[in-house]
Amino acid sequence: MSLTFDTALITHRGGREYNEDTALAETLDDGRRLWVVCDGMGGHADGEVAAQTAAAAVWAALSDGRTFAEAIDAGHAAVADKNAASGTDMRTTLVAALGTDTAFEYAHCGDSRLYLFRGTEVHLRTVDHSVVMALVHTGDLAEHEVRTHPDRSRVLRALGDPAGFQPAFGEAPLAWRPGDRLLLCTDGIWEHVTDTEMALDAAKSDHSGEWLQLLCERIQYRVDGRHDNYSAVAVTIT
Image 1 (tube, one colour):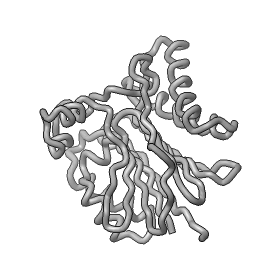
Image 2 (cartoon, one colour; image 1 turned 120 degrees about the vertical axis):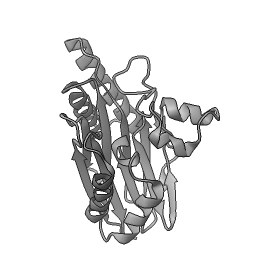
Image 3 (tube, one colour; image 1 turned 180 degrees about the vertical axis):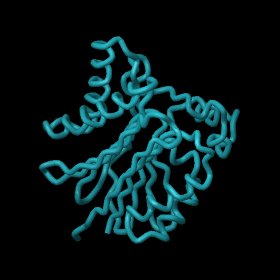
């Protein structure tokens, strides 16, 4: 069975002066596909540099033949090296997926997410490394309150953080099924659009670009002009 991968991406500064997000979609020489979304932190241009540095380093490491885990480590090392050289404290979240013609693997660090939409079901494959998600795990916060909690942006793990770099990986590569859709996104997306709405927009769209456009229209309808950067990569498997 031959699969095709319809991919689209968006990255927008939202209501902020700077866009500290990065989205990347590339194909390696061996045909594998890499999708990455990063949400930088550090203020002003530093977050943007951290996000772009991490994504580029992951791509370069895979291009050099390193494993997926080694590539994520390389993303962290690249940001840490820039911090050491410039005396900055740049950090970035990261969510990444690496797909072959039969399956995909994924990793994340921070609160950028990966969703798998399969049939009528929505599967959030990542668990946020954040203060609010820790409160959910201890029973002190309901999961539906995460999107509006005042501490929702406080992440506990990030690339570039010497004390907080601890990426999480999927247990095993997941086999593709025709009709599968992936959404890799920053909190600027999932804070404003519910999982159910993401699935509804996926069902209404014929391709990945249309899906992202529908999600963006929801964000624009709900924000107050001071909202965060938002970025995503959408993939449709046929």
